[in-house]
Amino acid sequence: MSDPVEKPFSPSCERNREPILDVLREVFSERSHVLEIGSGTGQHAVHFASAMPHLRWQTSDRTEYLAGVRSWLDDAALANTPAPLVFDVGQDDWPAMRFDAIFTANTLHIMAWTEVERLFARLPEIMSDTCVFVAYGPFNINGQYTSDSNAEFDRWLHERGAHMAIRDLAAIDALAEAAGLQRIALQPMPANNFCAVWRRS
Image (cartoon, rainbow, N blue to C red):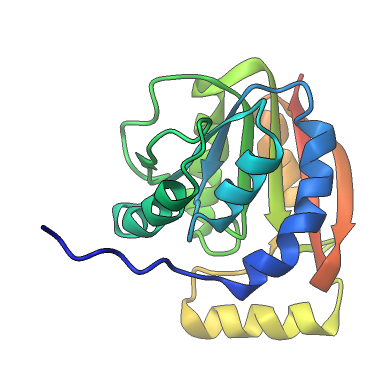
């Protein structure tokens, strides 16, 4: 028998889950099947799926993170959280299903820009006709940092990896539009983050 997996824990997930939930309650109120891209620790999935039982919350991430996600899902034992999917934006095989909601948190600044482009280019393959896409995290607005702390965070990202950077919202909007998405909201969040919301048009 394998040793039990220690549940990963992110303090930032604990801090931001309620403000994000306030946004998701509204924009996902008429959705039914959510794909979370980059589920990380699994904390968000458990919290959101518990608070919104009308949603089937599908977690996904790279293989190395799935044991941690499963540990959170197994402990919560929610009826609306199926087993996590192995998912990497760069992989050829994407989920063979469509979703009417997609959520991702703190991923766009971690991916290389080519991966961000690939994500949006392939979103139409997995979006239903009425899909709503929500991305949480920091964004630059009109080419400018929204705070000194975000400027410092961006420098820290570059030190970790040259491919990482806070993305400009206009550049993301352009990719979204090419994928058939129109931004319908930009909700300021604590710690100089945003929830950007796009809907398939």
